[in-house]
Length: 96
Image 1 (cartoon, rainbow, N blue to C red):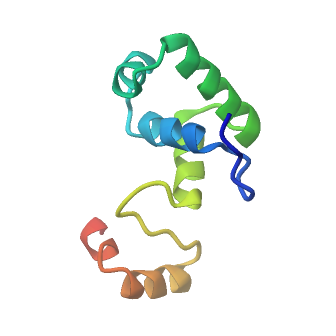
Image 2: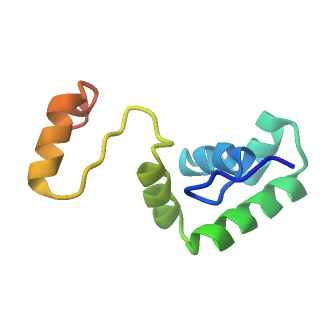
C-alpha cells in the first residue's frame, strides 16, 4: 500500500485516479488505462470521495486544482492574486 500524501490524505494512486476522473474518464476507461479491475477503480473513487468529503465531479475538479494535479492550470483565489499568478505563469495567459 502506498503512503498517503501528508497534506491531502490521498495516496499517489488515488491522485492518479483523481486526475483521470476530472479528465472525464469513466471507471472502465481508467481500469483499462491502469490495468486494474473496475472494482479497484470504484474502491479508489469511494476512498477519494470519503477523504475529500466531495461527491460531485465539479467538487473533485476543485480539489484537483487546489492540489495542483491539473497541468497547465494556475489558480489563485482573489482578483489581484489571480493577476499576479498569471504574470508568474506563462500557461495561464492562454486560458483566458
